[in-house]
Length: 355
Ligand code: 13P
Ligand code: SF4
Image 1 (cartoon, helix red, strand yellow):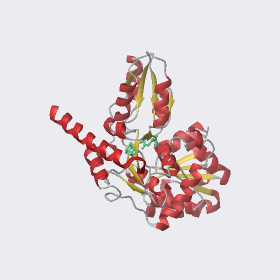
Image 2 (tube, protein in one colour):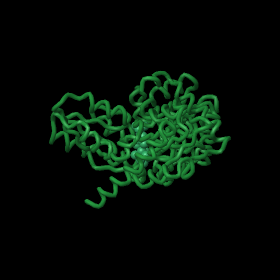
Image 3 (tube, helix red, strand yellow):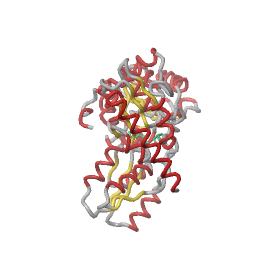
Image 4 (cartoon, protein in one colour):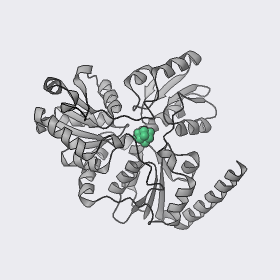
């Protein structure tokens, strides 16, 4: 333990000295699920929407190091300026949910779906947690990207364009958004790509307003109703806040639900002495507990995202030692152009400047 702390101390000193030497040429962006030591070093922390907005707004830095998962770094690259490079300290930091939908399978589903509805009546909306090729698919079909902080605004915009929304890959964010907007269960269907017509009948597709890919996040679907019941019994006064990648049953039993930045604000705004139980990734829960010592911040259940955890001090230092050279995120021009259209539409959604 002592050795590890000394090791970390030395690495942190090296990182800080490179950071000082690079000054304004470098910006380090960190997602809320990163380890505390990475967050402490970063220039800006945020949810996936805030980070993409920051990447789009920063014109001064020559180098962007993105401490988060791969799809987030890709979005930063798409939104960055031509003179900027985006590096991710660990290229293998993927996302299980993003891997549940690929461009070929989505295109096949789109063809099947629109053979029933006609293309003019469906708009594709893709969750930020997806490959750049899927963002490009949406950009090319008039659609947009959303994150957990603007899904409702994106859905409202989608319905202003066309009659139905095809949303992928997170069925839970999609369903929770549909529920929040007041759609009854028979207007929301799930598309299982391994079955003809996604496992639906032509009638149910025609009737549906929201068609959801059947992807999910393993970190958030670990939270169950039983965990909520247990903590409600043990801490009857506590407030429970969860992320919208949780199931609708969990969301229905919680007191509040929102993106990682929403959760951070919810905890910050809670009165001193209160107990807040949080249903999201454990690194964020633990950090909020440290940063809010006058409140009791507890986990709903232990759930770690191993993908986010792949970023560490060692690989961050390596990226900095080889600034602009190692693990540079690149995206083919054709994909980038259309993906940018979809991301720009997201950045223009009403309320996007308030997150
Ligand atoms: P946020 O957009 O809320 O930061 O969520 C990203 C994510 O991957 C949650 O699992
Ligand atoms: Fe992907 Fe889930 Fe990890 Fe978020 S928490 S990055 S959705 S695997």
